[in-house]
Length: 355
Image 1 (cartoon, rainbow, N blue to C red):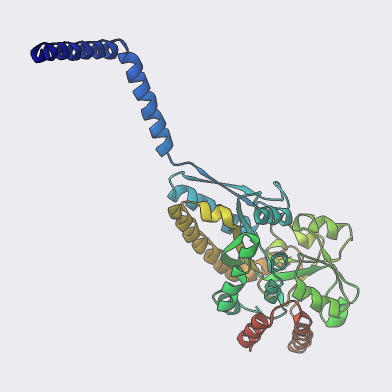
Image 2: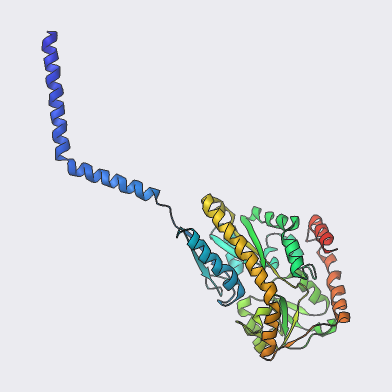
């Protein structure tokens, strides 16, 4: 009986093996196809997705922030990432204006980077107003000292509750004020209509001298001056003769009380934190490089930009020692107006650094 059962069991086993062989043989193509598809899916899943990065700003394609900051960033990041990162730059407010772009970054409805002056960043922390205080940053050494300080680190951290992260500092060429009339003394500012880009400290100083300030996007500043909406424009000295040609509508130029306007590079924090660590490290390294290079270029080309403007009919005004002292006294005098908007700790640090 046991022997008979063994034979039956053996027969059944052989039958099953035969059936399995037939099934495999008949469905071999499908099995191979299925295996192939599975492999393809697995291969697709292991392919690293391209990271698309957008940068929007309101300057022209020949402006220094485009040429010396954003374009080098794009070229180096795309090359060093072997194509894993693709950067698209939108100049001239072609995507949207800079204020709206920052709002979308903060809201999390946009992903990418923005470079913003202190006045624009006061929308997220009024402490950024310290960087626009008259005569706080009056030289390249001042800029380096301030942006490498505990104060600068504190300011960047204040962006985080707004879903923004600060990645670096740079600056434009010498900050200039172009005007239709010569400006030698504080009295010359009375009645002046100045285009600004949200520079609270300087605006307070100009208001103290009897001028009115008007927040107008850079892309509209030339036409505003040409049409008489304003008769002075606060911007970088490189815009006097090059690119924007403000010398055509504002013959006179002079340096502003904030000699070098800082630019903070920021990103949407949630997006930034979600990126692969190696790609974040790569982009941070490149930002570190290009921000320093743009700053050094700005320091080295301010004088040549002034000469370029003079060469095409502009008149550059350098205050006498006595005139400069009067401007400085008024500028330092408005610091106290920011006691309620700039935190005491930040103001104390600023005063200690300035002294």
